[in-house]
Image (cartoon, rainbow, N blue to C red; front, side, top):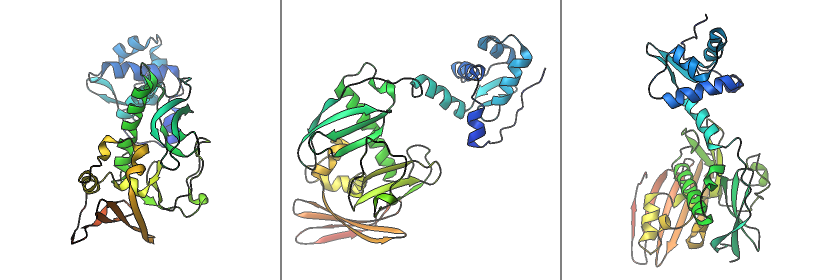
Length: 310
């Protein structure tokens, strides 16, 4: 009988995905996930998976050891990459396709004041204006997010995912893989990332920012002023004037946001944004990771300046 290898060397993405092309291997990962954190012996795992031929079972297990499975003196355990595969299967992201009708979204369009509605297509949830077709929000939303939820509860779950993603992007971190990323300001439609869904028409906005991950290729788009509202100093400024962005859905933030953007440099990016509220303004300067290089709060009578890194 051939014993599975025990090395933990990395493999390229194409090879890693090709290793999953077997129902037996997916059952192995599921069994190890159910047993975690306790390891499983070869014989116990073989019985759980239901493969009688030990040689055939060892062959499939051998393919998984390293990228998805680790071996120790106590037996076999599942690696995080294997857990992610099982989670993807259980979440229904690759198999479930909920059929949901458009539904109304509370609030109005930030551009024309028209009513908003949500629609779901290709695992993407979009919120758009019924009058001018302005796209207020668009992001992936897994099919199980609709299970046993009202429309209001779906939107609440969607908003939590959006806020988390924007919060990470605003601090230079990829929401997908946690690697670092940077922001650019496209000057034309050709500068925008490819692979966009038909749900999302290009939007002309000279202050629109594109975040790109340096590792996995994840990208996201948002008005740069809205992204900066995820910094504590900006949120605090608006909270002092009665606007709590933590209580507002991401797609309505721009309605409460008055700001001016001055792009000082594009390579590397340096942008100066002035936020207005009441009789005060907050001026922040940010770099390509949206780290705040300077912060200045101004009023009719005085200004207070300082360096911030939040």
